Image 1 (cartoon, one colour):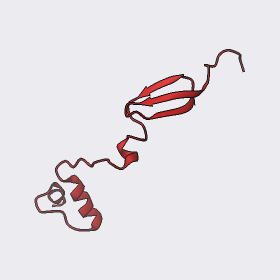
Image 2 (cartoon, rainbow, N blue to C red):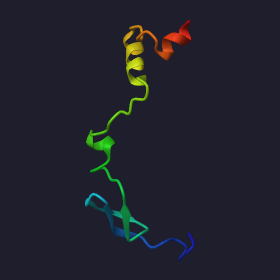
Image 3 (cartoon, rainbow, N blue to C red):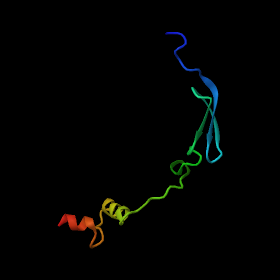
Image 4 (tube, rainbow, N blue to C red):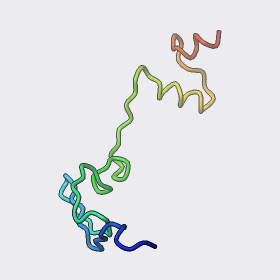
Length: 80
């Protein structure tokens, strides 16, 4: 390998999240500021919300359960 072509490695680099969480990792950057981390991301915390537009989630769950969707829904009109 060629000498002096690789970036300097910082084994104790600090990552600071907007929520206040601080993580120490190895990186080519000495410090980083991020907006979302595993401590505040909705996927990891379980606080995520499903955004239901026009009843799509209910129609999917009805189809998955083997029930017919509500009368007048878009899915029912496509099957005709």
